[in-house]
Amino acid sequence: MDFQEQSHLKDTTAFSNLLANRMTVFTLAIACGLAIANVYYNQPLLADMSRSFHISVQQVGFIPTLTQVGYATGLLFLVPLGDRLERKQLIIKMFGLLSCTLVAVAISPNIIWLGVASFFLGFSSIVAHLILPFVAQITPPNQRGKVIGTLMSGLIISVLLARSVSGFVGKLLGWPGIYWISAGVMIVLALAIRQQLPENRSSSQMSYPQLMQSLAHLTYQQPVLREAAFNIALIFCAFNVFWVTLVFLLESPVYNYDSQVAGLFGLVGLVGAGTSSLVGRLVDRWGARRVVGIALCFALSGFTILWLTGTHLMGLIFGVIILELGMHSAYLSNQIRVYNLVPNAESRLNTVYMVINYTGGALGSLFGSYSWVIGQWNGVCALGLSLLILAAILHFGGRRK
Image 1 (cartoon, rainbow, N blue to C red):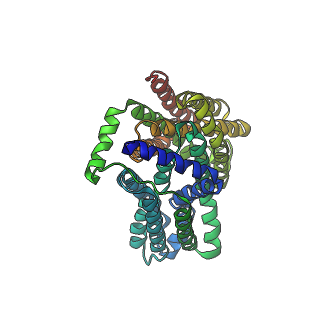
Image 2 (tube, rainbow, N blue to C red; image 1 turned 60 degrees about the horizontal axis):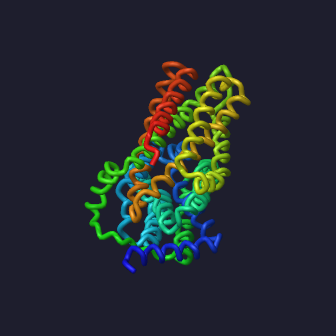
Image 3 (cartoon, helix red, strand yellow; image 1 turned 120 degrees about the vertical axis):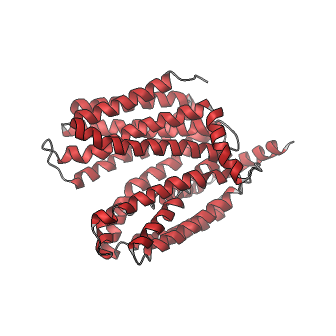
């Protein structure tokens, strides 16, 4: 029996032990969600931060941007290490580093310190993207959808609730409070993972420069990776085109609502969290590519409903639900497609997938504002539908294998 066969047998045994203990899967879902939630805690706290440092809200507005840039940088430069280092210890160490950066944010004496600490907070908040490839590797392909879907449920719920929780804690304890609490939670999660996760040593002997070079090689050699990554980038771009302009629609004479109502629409995203496990099971049964096609149909239907009936509240709510279902289903299905491509390269495949996806989302936020200025709601929906039609052409006209 060669090394790869021994590794596969060990991974299958590890998965059997993992699946037998549902508490471990639940712990990993919580760990994924709470790690990425750290990126979003600062958004409702900006006004408190500006008062604390005696600066304007506009001056403190770059803090979320720095956090997001740090997150994208971590995705690119840290996640590939999952294919080189022992994954369990890497995850534990990253939780430790994340706890330290949270403390650094909490004790910030000035805005410059806060900006630097926020960048490194985002940089170290990529733990979910170490856990997901780890679990994908030790999970048999016919079980991947169910398990990854469960982890994604925890991630989505945590992101949706992060802003509300941080705003509530900030009101009670001041803006540093949520960071102190989260620092302690990260330590608890590290200890829990140390107890519950199996060791997982990579067979790769590549150096770090070779790992980084292989990102381009994988992108070139794997057409399915390119198809899945650009597919979800276009869908995420359309998704952000909608969400970045929703507040403009709700504050317009059509509705005359305030920004708090726009925030409540974010809770509709719980639909995506509630269906992630189901979508994962459908991927296991039908195949990821077919589910991506169904997800695209949902997303196209959602934007069509938003265009035709978005100026009526029930039509807007229904359109958001359908769009959310399409977005989260496509994200999960495309991610599983990527994990199935090359054994022992899950972390690097995930890096390419996430960086391209994240770039699409950032462009959507940028283009959405311009589309509203140029064409108001019609311009937003026209751009969103155009992006989704392009994604459908890429998918349905792409490779079948």
